[in-house]
Image 1 (cartoon, helix red, strand yellow):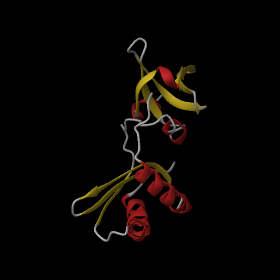
Image 2: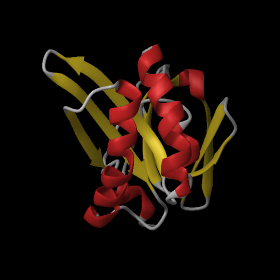
Image 3: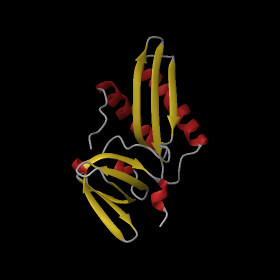
Image 4: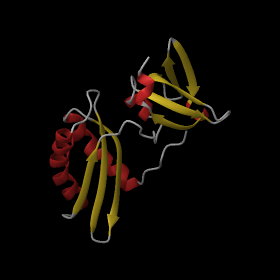
Length: 155
């Protein structure tokens, strides 16, 4: 599984925003940013074990918008804050650690088979999915695609 690449500018902005977002009690799952001809667009995806509400998104939006304006020296910022969604395609292996305890399905590169279950462990090189008392440990390099799947949580 290859991570979606971030630009150096996106990484710098994520590094600046992560401590603020974590200080509010959320995890930064994804951050995308791009300069537009008439401003700057930022998309932030948050996670929290208890879930994300509209009020949570509004709180983070209100808190980080002034910081982005200062960092980017831009007043016209289009900021979107959202939750990962129940069927999110995982865009980097590190997301497995964020979603431990959640249902997921992974497409194995070798045989093209989907394996589903609850993400029970992530080591950086391996992810373990548990379902009906059976554990499947899969090498990250052997995963073609992965996505959250809330139907996997029902046993």
